[in-house]
Image 1 (cartoon, rainbow, N blue to C red):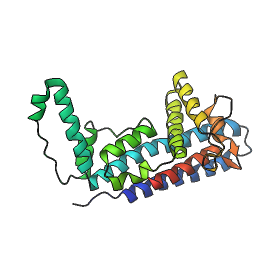
Image 2 (image 1 turned 45 degrees about the vertical axis):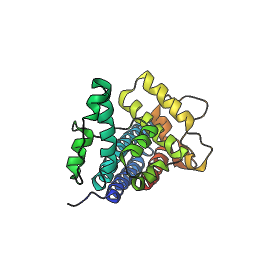
Image 3 (image 1 turned 180 degrees about the vertical axis):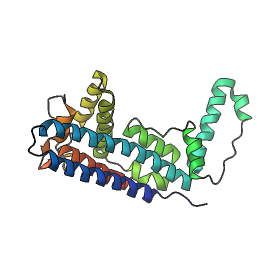
Length: 234
């Protein structure tokens, strides 16, 4: 049975972001000097960022499944514990002691996806903390090493990306508040985070925020470049 390759998942994601970066550069050149340049660049930055953030969510799903396709033991151990706790809570210890779980040594990638998601949907991680929590529960020590080793800078980047993506998708007042809270954590002091945070003022227009240049590089480009680096280490 051929196993999924996590390296292939990483390579595919980096390729997607490289295509988005090339697209942004081409479109930026096309609108330069036009009467609609400012508005077009704002919309372009939002569109590219949204596509990249969705791609990152899919990347995390595919990476977890690839890891578990190669070694499904940790997930099954965690599942057995959760089943036992659920039965005990509902029916008592006596019933829980009678429940057994028979792990399987191998499953296809599709089989792993069906067991883990169970609904046909992708895995979703609401924050970097949840991502690490699931990695610790579902992946073997060697597989989760890169994810668990992500720095506070990396965590802040992931959370900021998620919050911007949610605001772009929903445009609600609550999503804007959450986004600004996340961006406040991503200060521009450390080299790895340079240009990604915000100052004392709240971000009101995401397109303007993303197209702004810091250190000669537009913020949306810095976000995508950093996401590639983080993904490569996961």
